[in-house]
Length: 234
Image (tube, rainbow, N blue to C red; front, top):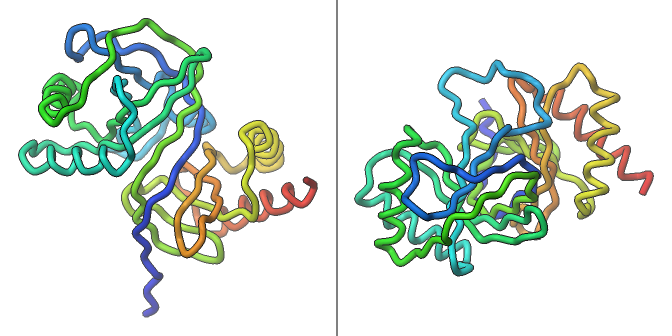
């Protein structure tokens, strides 16, 4: 039996989400944003049992490198035993730009105040609360653990509903939206949310992140070919 190659690396994901200020389960007068409608391009409520798409962004006073935030998160995990993931994020919303720690895979949203205290213990300072609501462009710096499924197609081993399709060129956000909208009109039988990404292999490669339930390799090959066909027009 053949075994597909596994890859561990770093990279980034850019996406748009509806965000608003989190008002509960948070330390007094600290600023956090929550996703109001995670994965807006995915039109379906039937996510797998136990899958929690909720993400919270703790807004920090000072920009820190993704490696620094990763080290602090690893240190917290040594003594804080409940499950969570923390990674660096940059958010542009309503003409404001914020640096943040994106938290996911929280067992319970009530964990947030204790997690905030742990990050503060490690030297993180949070911004004071602001009232914000709108669409935000989010840039995430994150660790990837990937399985190669086929030519230019990768599966995320840390999230069962995430896949990455290699594309031959870097896209700006507007071009990506136009191409993705066109593809989704042509593939109305395939339901997915898309985002832009870059992954560090031998070279930096550009990818489209696909979020979808019950996606087969053949479906992913069809979607990737659609992106390749569309990109030839530009």
